Length: 348
Image (cartoon, rainbow, N blue to C red):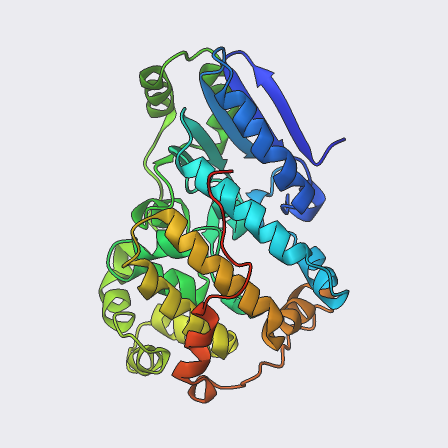
C-alpha cells in the first residue's frame, strides 16, 4: 500500500500516514503527495474538513525520515534542502488552510509530525499522546515551525520543551499551545464517523466537544515555577547553572537532558526560539529555520547525531565542540546568516 492514504469519507477529506513500522516517519515523497492532496480538498466544495491521522497504534508521526537525510548528505545530494523547503511550504499552508484542519495527535508526535499537526485548526490529543521537538538530541534545531510554537508557549515552557526535548503528554501539549482538546483513544473512531457528517465549522466544533474529556495532569501542572525561573535566561550556561541549583527531581532530569544533548544545537535552538518571539509570522520563522537547517546539515554534529541515534544506535555521539562553553556567540550567529538560494517562496 501507499505510504500516504488519501481518501474521502462523507464530507471529510482524510489523509493517513501509512508507515506504521517506521512510526509513520515523513518522507519527501509523502510531502510531495500530501501538499497537492490538501490543495485538492480545499478546492472541493463537497469537502467540509480535512483530517490527518497515522496508521497503527504507535503514533501519528515520529518526525521526518532523518535516515534518508543522513544518506543523502553522505552522498552529496541536495535532497535535504529540497525536502525541508517543500515541507516548510506545506507547514505554512496548513496554518492558513481555508477549512477546518483536524489533526489526530495520538501516540508519538515528534518533529515533522508536529509540523503536520500543531499548525492545524483542530488539534486533538489522547491519553497516549507524547508530543516533542527532539532535534537537539541529534545535532539539529527545532524546525517545521517549531520555533514559532515554542516561542509562543506560555512563560518559558517553549524554551524548556525545545532544549530538553521532553515528551509532553496531552495536558502539557494543551498547556504549551501545541494542541487544543483531549479525546480518549477509544472515542477517536466514533468521532471520525461523526465528522464525516459535519457540514459546517460549528458542527465540527460541536462533534469534537461532545467527545472531549479532561486530560490527566502532566509535568507542567506542578513544575511551571522552576521551569519559568530556570529557562528565562538567554544563555545555555545560565540555564544549566539555574537547574543545577534546584532540588526538584524533574529539574535534575532536565539538567541531565541538557548535558546529553548537542552543545551547539542547544545554543542555536535557544537563539532561534528567542528570535522567533520577535518575528512577525510563522512564515518568517520557517524562513529562519530553513537557513538554520541548511547550516546544521553542513556542520558535523547533525550527521554524527543521526549516526549515533538512528543508524548505529550506539547512543554515543561525539559532539564538536564537546561542551557548551566552547560554542561561541559568533558560531551561533553564523547559523542565521543568509546564504545563496536559501529563500523560500511561500506562495507555492
